[in-house]
Amino acid sequence: MSKCDIKKMPGYVDASKIKNKGLEMKVEQLLTKYDVVTYHGTDSAEIEGGSFDVTRRSKNSSMLPQGLYSTPSQLEGAGFGSSVYKLGVRKGKVYNFTNPKENERSSAMVSAYREALHNSGYTGEWAEGLVGDFVDTGFMKPGISAEDKTKVLLAGGYDTVMDGSRHLISLNPNRDVKILGRQDSESIKERSDARKRKKFWHNKNK
Image (tube, rainbow, N blue to C red):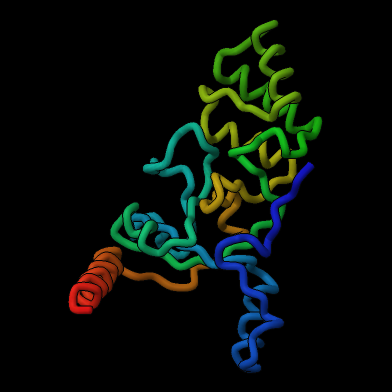
């Protein structure tokens, strides 16, 4: 069974290679609690008082678990709301949603998945067949609610979902995520556009 390598994660910092001792100490202090720095785009009211409300309707697919979505790209985050929050994320135990078969599936997860199926109207032999598929492949039925998917993952002791190679879903953000800063999305987009214009004129005048 393959495992996620933290050193290959976007935002990973090897503090041992930093020569500035003052900066090294600050990075070490950050990494004692948080593994990566990511960005979350949203409307400001969603994080009032520094508390994440994962039950709010999001722009992300309902096929994915409920949680706090983030990306290593600040500009990408700006596409999801009026504000972009810089986050320190503790990943903990990671579930690979793109390749579910590689993940460990405990008996507690199987029980939670069976309950999730019943909540979505799957019963009897149909439900047991889907449970068997989950045990064999790790695949969860798309029709199950995002909230129930999260309950299944939490039953297995998972803290974070890796959606593809870049995006993270923090299942318990009020425990595992710290807000490190905030910027307006428009200012991020404007800076990006300015860099593109500068690069265009630089290349044109060569």
